[in-house]
Length: 426
Ligand code: MEV
Image (cartoon, rainbow, N blue to C red; front, side):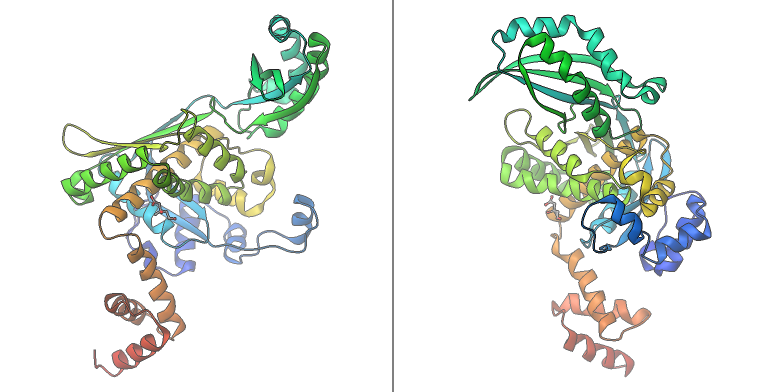
């Protein structure tokens, strides 16, 4: 059924969780302990949780699924996704299967540059102050880089400085922006430390008062991009291609639709983010503010038709993700999810996440322009009802399918159908 080290696995959804885990274990080279930790659903112990946040009383567990079929930059990936919403993992796997026909996803990233902002108020001569700060760039960057010698030794650290004067309703302000190469860290801690460290220099130079010293989540210098071609015949023909382009046009022109369009993209990105211990609030803030950067709120993806009539999708968004520091480094399940993904750098993780976002958007639009979104949800719901009513083995799908066809997904109908199938009446 599977080609070794290929993520292309048909019928993965039909297997039991244990059988699926065994495939993932083999694919990613997980140890017995790692596999059991995932399976036990108790990966985070109380003492560790108690050190991660404040006022801890326990934990909450959400399902961890695996999206299959992903081929990104010619490499096969099994994608761990943690979320509570049905259909998302299936949709991503399905989209990835279709993308494979034309080579899968091709993704790139910019360097992992984050922006740290230092707000200076009460400056009498803001434009003069701006010049003085720019002239002291070497001193400021040196001070920033003293804060993280390890990062600097790895080729990262504070690289550049922007200074702008902005008009606000409390008057003009000088905003200093430190540009920091965070390498494999998400970088918020590093950037905040650096911004705090250079603040006294800025106050001295400006005779103003430094107020905020904080990372910007609008990480426009840390972009991830992906593209994929979807073969028109594979996805259902010309009508589906045109439908998806029209659905995209709707989002492009209407913020009410665009919010949902982008939400679908973030379904995938956030699920991988949770599985790998990322700061998903930062990812959401970055994505939506980037979508609004041109002055009105726009889709994070584009959809068009190429000369063969195939559908071409692209995505571009800031993805501040890391492999070192934060929950990624301490949460045992997040560490195993990184191992399953097999990503070696934060840039590679961002490339995977951008591809998942594009796949998710494709799947949502395709469903919306064809059968609608409810059918997939209903199928899963019907299976759950069938299982709760006592169906096992092949009977689960038989009962579920019948309830979906009849649009009667109810416990009493499931019980009736089980009885009828068992008595051979169906
Ligand atoms: C549901 O979680 C996501 C969708 O609404 C996205 C979309 O409408 O594009 C299906």
